[in-house]
Image (cartoon, rainbow, N blue to C red):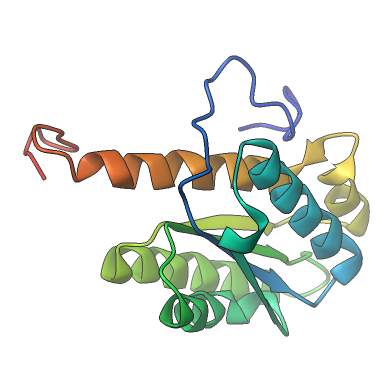
Length: 175
C-alpha cells in the first residue's frame, strides 16, 4: 500500500474479521524504540479494537530488526499463536547495511511462516530518513503498526478457514 496515496492506519472499505478467537504474537525491535514503540502500540490497539483479548496477545522484545525472525520462532515455541506481527525499523543511512538487514529479515520471516504454518507479518519500516519513519509511526502517513495488525487478523482468519473442507487456496487445490 502506498502511503503517498493512503494512510497506513485506514483500512478503507475492507471488512476486518473479528479477532476474539485468535492468539497473536508481537515481536518488537528495541532499536529505534522511538519509532517501534508507537508502531507496536498501534498494532496492539488495533488488535484490541477488532476484538482480540489482551491475554491472547504475547509480546517479546528483541535487540534489533535483524533479530525479528528468531524472536518470532522463540515466541511461537512458548505458546500456540495464529499470527505474529514483527515490528522494526531500518533507516537507510550512509551505507548499504539496510539492504542486507531488510533482505535477511524478509527472507527469515517468509521461511519462518512457511515452515511453522504461522503467518509472520512484516511490520518493518524501511525509510530513507528518520523523518520518513516518524511519518509512518503515527505521523502524517498514519501508523504501519495498524496495517500490520489488520494483516495479521486477516491471515489468522484465512489460516483458520483454510482448514475447513472444501476451502482451497492457490492453483485450486483443496487444503
